[in-house]
Image (cartoon, rainbow, N blue to C red):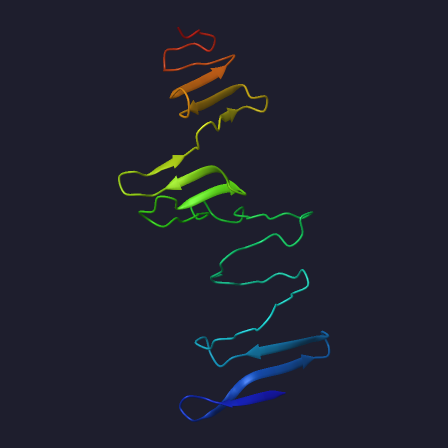
Length: 165
């Protein structure tokens, strides 16, 4: 079945094509007349837990978890070396922020001559599954950078159990 529409040049063209294949029990639907067509859906598009495939670009305001039990996985495992990339805008004080509610954990700054990864005050960096080493900065009260752990080594010549004085 075809629904024909008038094109800009006055010609009649297929705007929607619905085509069945009884052998495979499927229905194929083509919407639009060429790659420059815009398809607008009012309301929700429910794919019933099916995948969207062969997408060149997704332009969205947010991506949310639909099922908390499944979570959200951004999978770059199929990318070749150097092609799994997260691109940030240049010259932005907060190009990417990782947070929970209003609690910020990491902020990536791409500000020219001020690029960096910003860790909020009093948030320790913890290394090792058992918290073997922690690095914390206390700007609010003491302006102190504290590095703590049972086995610290700082510098090329230091030994694993050397005590810092």
